[in-house]
Structures are given as structure tokens and as C-alpha cells.
Image (cartoon, rainbow, N blue to C red; front, top):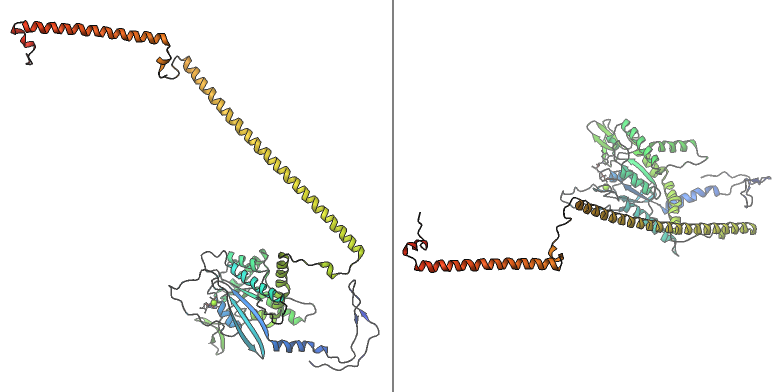
Length: 478
Ligand SMILES: Nc1nc2c(ncn2[C@@H]2O[C@H](COP(=O)(O)OP(=O)(O)O)[C@@H](O)[C@H]2O)c(=O)[nH]1
Ligand SMILES: [Mg+2]
């Protein structure tokens, strides 16, 4: 950058720029000649070019949505070669895999080390409830590794593997976001720069696309999902602001991917897809938002994506992680100590402590009261149950008695009693015995009498004439 030498002059009136309280005032001075620090951006530029750039992008979406094709199209290189078709018997993976590919690419002497993290298997299973989990774990493990490197004694070789942008591929359904899309974006939006894209946009008409984009944006807003927005700064020129607005207006980007060069009907050679009814040109802004996506991801906002990842996403995660590990920051180290303020602070702290103690005591008291209450309630229930049992038993007894009474009154025996003779007493038993003895004696007499009678008859028959013999014969007489 050329600088015009000027006469060196110091202005008489120093300009005070609203000094913040507690800081010494900043004096603005006009330069009257060439110093050279206007060349600082060039120094940074040269250094960056020498060092090269590093960028990590992640692609997530169901298989077949054109992720690999789009990456090849974006970086104009065959990072992903054409897939070999698998036989139907080939075993299908059962979990989401995380595969990263690195490549060094160069454009006009500027080197970029690009890493693409692919997530094959996402959304491809019968149950996709936890598809987001391995991806969150991968992003966090990259943060972990960076944190570990930051805490090393020697930090000369820090490798930044953090994911700077995540392209989330939406199926061109024309409906609203699916549950898996919402779940993924909700889980990831605080950990990575989310860039939603509508895959295979050539399968939708202009009107369908416009309506689909509207639905997606309202769903995203409804679920409070934060997607990456191109930042705008004060004092930016109109051109930059217009560019940012145009990029923002295309989100979610409707993309078409193709790494093949095809011939258009008017004889041009373009990257695109040929159909019987025409050619879809990838780099034609009339046909899809691919150019705007590339502008956001690479040409205009790659550095913003890296910065946002480092300054906001990683920083928030790091703070949370360290606080979770019990590391606290002693804020008093970083401020000047004012005795009055200190006293006030201590008083506030003391009051807070008292309030905390009071709250704790209140809580313990409430807990005890609750315990007592529940015990009382329990014994009340027990008493009630016992009372009920007794009442039932008494009722049963009453019913039995009433039944007996009724039977007695109707003259029937209450119950047929067994062995009732046992309860008759001695005299009746004796009487019965005697009566039974008498009966036996009578039987005996009758028996003896008849025996004698038969004996006499037999004796008479032996002496009787044979005409009586028929009585002893067995022959029938009739
Ligand atoms: N219609 C259409 N097909 C595409 C597009 N991008 C890729 N494809 C095709 O979709 C199929 C799967 O693409 P691939 O990149 O392997 O998908 P991935 O599984 O998501 O990586 C291939 O046949 C591609 O040619 C696109 O933008 N539109
Ligand atoms: Mg793929």
C-alpha cells in the first residue's frame, strides 16, 4: 500500500475520546509525516499467506443428499472420489461414523489446509434418536484437545482441529423441518456455526423453494436455533453491507452440486447437471444459491467463521468446562482495591451468607415439618384401616347371630350337630343301652323258640310217613 509522505506536525489541541472511568485519557494526535504503520495490514497479509490458512468444515445429512459432491464442488477438487456401488449383501454400518479428510489446496499462491469431516450414517437407521450424539462428542473432543494444548507448557505447536462450520443438509421435501433436523440443530447450535442448506435444490420449483425456505426459517426461529449469520460492522461501505444482506437473504442456501463439466445448449462449458429439459448450472446464481454459499463459507466469511468459533463457541464451552471442573476465577486479582468498596462488598457477601443460612434453615424446618406430617398421615391411615377391619368383623358377627336367631325362631336346628349322643348325659345313655340290651334278649328268645320249633318239625318228619317227604324235596309241585 503506497503512503504519501506528509509534513510532520503535532496538533495543539489534544482530542479526548470519552475516557472510560478509571482510565487515563487518550490523546489523539495528527501525523504530519510518514511513519509507516499504515502498512501493518500488509504485514499481516504477507505473514498469513506465508503461514497458510487452516479450515475445518463438517457435513451432516442423510446419505445420498449430495454432501460429498458439494464438497468437491465447493473446493473444486475431488476430495471425495466417486463411490463404488456396494453389493446388496454388504453389511451396513450400525452407528454414525466420523470420517475426516485433509487436503492442501492452493489458489493464487494462498495455501489452505482444508479438513472435511463427514458423518456417514447420520439419519440412515430405523431409530435415529441418538444420531446427533457421536457428532456432539466429536466436536467436544476437538474442543478438549485444543484446551489441552493451550494448557501445555510449550505452546509453539498448537494444532487447531476445531470445526469452524457445519453444513447441515436438509432433504428437499418441501415440508417443514423433520424431528431429526430440529433435534440435531438444537443440540449443535451452541457448539458449531450451523449453516443449513437445502440439498438437491434442482428437484424443486422456484415457488416450492421459496415456500420451503420460509417454513424452515420459521421453524428455526420457533425452536430458538441459532444459525450462523454474516456479521455486519459499523462504518462498513455500502457494497459490503449489500453483499452481507444478499447472502443473508439466501439462507438456507438451496444448492446443486456437480463436479462434472457439461456443455450448455448455447455452447458454453460449465459445471452442472444435464437433464433432458436443460442444464442446471452450479455456478449460475439464477439456478441455485451455490455461489452465495461459497461466498459465505470461503470468500467472505471464512475468517469470521474461524473467529466466531474461537471467540464465542469455544470460549463459552471452555468457561463451562472449567467451571464444571471447579476452576473459579478470582476476580479480585484483576481490580484495584478500594477499602470502602471492599467493605461494602464484604457486607453484601455477609448478608448473602446470612440469607443463604436462613434459607437453608427454613428448608430444613420445612423438611422436618413435612416428615412429621407424612408420619402422622401414615399412622392415621393405619388407624383408619384397623378401625375398618374391626368394624367389618363386628358386622360379620352381628349377621351370624341374626341368622342363628332367625333359624331358632323358625324352629329348625341351627346346624346339624354331629355326635349329639355324646352330649346326652349319663342317664339317657344308660336307658338307651338297656333298651338296646332288652331288644337283644327278645331277639334271642325268638331265635331259640324258632330253632326249637324247627328241631321238633325235623324230628316229626323223620318219623312221619313218606307222604310228607315232598316238603324236603326240591322238585316243584306246580
Ligand atoms: N439431483 C441432484 N443430484 C445430486 C446433487 N448432488 C449430488 N447428487 C447425486 O446424488 C447422489 C449421491 O451423492 P453423494 O455426494 O455421494 O451423497 P452423500 O451420500 O450425501 O455424500 C449421486 O448420484 C450424485 O450424483 C444435486 O445437487 N442434485
Ligand atoms: Mg458422501
